[in-house]
Image (tube, rainbow, N blue to C red; front, side, top):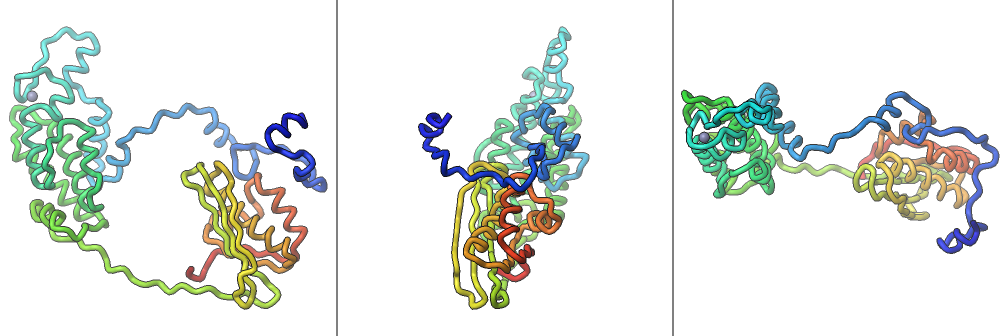
Length: 343
Ligand SMILES: [Zn+2]
């Protein structure tokens, strides 16, 4: 075993011993406090389906819930077209009921039929898009590089168009579909709290839909300040972050005394961890560095409410429990608070 560890670059004599004053205890790794819950066990054993790429496109749209529900079915391919019936071994001749020149499939009705193409052309003209919408993927791609407001308008227009076209019949006209789309766009504009970019193109799109401009609010300056701790106390400002949840993560901490002098600045990596673990490690490492430098009164200021509450209620993550117990023995007084000042 020693040889294997040596080959991996681990010196066994340098490894830190666990806290021998604390009794061993069982830990349920799937929960933050190490205690077993039925909910966390279910999360471990349940089968997860792959996330659909278009859910954010659909559920962030400022559209009527009824339209969104139908849009969900349309994007899932759950509409009763002849294509579906043939899949269930119905022997039948299939022909599009609108143009009567091609087989009735969902893609044909939504994008390839001459009726649908004319609707998409009118919408694309209003949105200043100069390429044809030939399938669902192109519909999603059009959202990219748009201002937040125009993204909402495009989502509302495209989803309401899908729903209006799939429920169309011989009596449907392009003007009736476009009036439904226009209503959806007006509603999205009323409900959206997002703003346009200050460009000619955005103004032209809003003008085409006969909507007023929605400018970004002017930025306001926030005052930032830092309050020094009382004498013989050290203030620890710390933060932890994960680039994903979980993904590569790290922590950083800054120690300053009552005169504002920087006593130490430390950073460290944690490998793959969640945001909560990274935040909790940042607090413990900050306290640990201050205690190692001989400080007995330690004030920690932190911005994560969840991490601060877990320390205040003594319900820290099981991975840092041992490290916290160790630093508690070194310091006389530790307090962890939310950062109430700016900066
Ligand atoms: Zn057709």
